[in-house]
Length: 308
Image 1: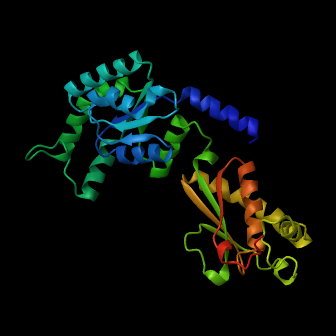
Image 2 (image 1 turned 180 degrees about the vertical axis):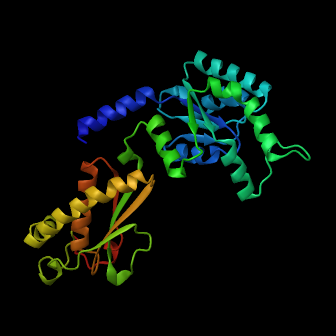
Image 3 (image 1 turned 90 degrees about the vertical axis):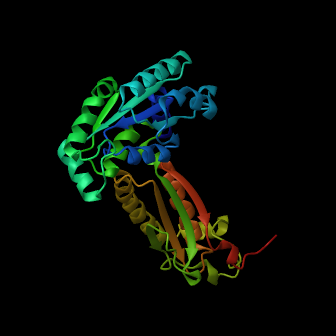
């Protein structure tokens, strides 16, 4: 996606994303997982908030100050009194020009009963001697008016967690799917140890090594002389073409899986020349492709680097 396209996508997102999102629904339908998705999107998140505190919390967080912050909360609205309280709170938010959307998570009775059985948990509404099935039916009846009033209803019966997160991201994020995944690109030296945190790692020790040139020995891959030597080599040119094609296939797959953070490690012998230059080029390529990238060089401080 081009830079102009990304800006247009972000502007469209900002226009449609509400200031406050309230997550409610059937017990066991995934409210906690949904709140985690909003946390990853940068929302200020509160679990199980009494509806009457919505406006107060929005003002404390600074939702209506124009700083672009958003709030997501879960609310238990199973009693009619709480729903009436919530309706009044939504009206108050709108009177203060704070937009609000209600997300209702629903799940079939069959799936809910299986989840309670597998987790060996008691339904929160179940009274002494009451069956799970009866408690689910009573909760569904109590929440019918809430479901009808919701802005978005998501049936999680057959949704995996990352599918739920994807649905919510696409509905409530200002960012593109690529920008929502934090990508950490870093160089390292194999002689200083393998990076256990890497999701994707490439070994570039097969490239010609600037270390053996006395002029470049105490420079790094961030220096133009070294970068030109590494990147201008015909072997590197072939490698970068293949590496970028691999990234073009792998990165969208990680995004589709709902991965919130990805570490890409580039290694050479000492983490000073080749890996640094390739990591710099990799980060630039991913940024150009629309990903949110941070770049670091793990072992550069350990290198024999010339100081001016």
